[in-house]
Image 1 (tube, one colour):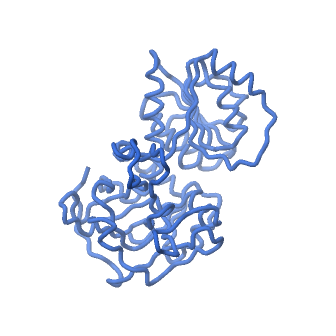
Image 2 (spheres, helix red, strand yellow):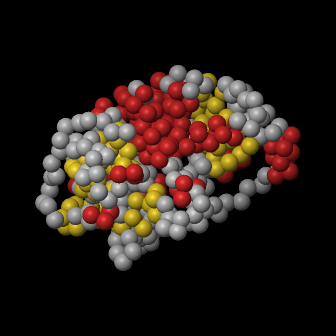
Image 3 (cartoon, one colour):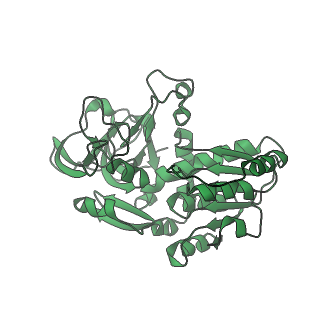
Length: 363
């Protein structure tokens, strides 16, 4: 969907843009390039002026050199997969100058696999997909970027300060979509949801749960601070005790930490006929003494289901845009706890103790 907005003109020097880049799999190669080339037309018909990019753990891992791959033939990769911008031009007429827009991160593989062929690139089965700012596609942390119209998601103009949250919201929109699909295996009337982890993904998962009218519980290690306030503003319940110490069995659990002990405790805690969705990614390399037989018995005898969810397709991005439009925009603004101008990019990527840090390219 597209929303009308004011026209916009390109800022900066035509022919080059500022861009935040890394040399993939080379630790500590982060830098701000001031003469990066303009985005080529081959990247897409829609030309966008960047407003902001969000920072998440994926960016930190790429900066540390753990993974990431550049565009074919290039040595560097532009970071940024959580985007927000304004359309400069779209000759296809799909969007209009001034429209607020975000770019979908993952693009289908060129083969394509059966899932990518029908627009479900989030379920790509051969791994040949590409992702802006992560794998094979330059990201959105540059003053101007291009994208094909079908990968550009229009946003309500009222989301100008918070639309950068669309990408993480699309991830939890997909999680809820798949929870519904799993739950539809039988007559199911869930009432209570537990979200483990009150980072951006967890808080947005709780937001979508509250929009569904569920009784929401959020668990995190932080005592006091902004997270408990944000949870309370949703009318939800905030907990800091271990999962096993909770005095209720949730019908649904969204696990958003990736912490191995929390993951296992969540699978054991969910109620009969319950669904556990895993969205956090564990780092691995840690061994835990655990009674797998007891877990197997509980999952089988109580008809429980556990599944993982990552990324999102166009349908989920559109659902996420609707969810943000319907949310309290002041609440969304409170999730963004640090805003940094692009000139201070190093400070932004080094920031700790924040819920969400973003880099601003333009107001």
